[in-house]
Length: 196
Image (tube, rainbow, N blue to C red; front, side, top):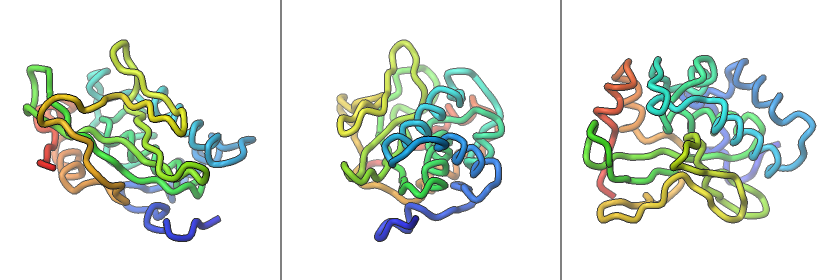
């Protein structure tokens, strides 16, 4: 089932490799017995949010980039987790893209500001709906509750922002960082940032 006008948000790439057999199998397993884009999207979201460990929260290696690597190693930074979620959704013929926030770093490691990656999913009844599968923790709660957004972070401080638009591919700065560094700590020290 192709969605007219959203082809670029359905395609497989080297990063969003939903043509990988393991990714495809997981996507179809998650959708089994469910009907409609909301139910399937929720199942994919909950799986990535709850079953894939956030690299920084768990101090986990390896650094992952492609959807298939995130699935294989069950770990990834927010960006990598968004790559897997997009792949699972696209494998189920649900258009999915990427959104970014610019956030202030309150830790003592890494740049003053950094990008945070999340997804937008096209739901027939709601249009583009942003979701954040980075993973919950005591100070972070994200959920799938369309049409109401329930994201992990809300930009509030000077310099923070929601970057506008839905991207069909991950930003080059994100791919570069996840391709360059092999240790989660080095990624944290070099988190990407762009001025809006």
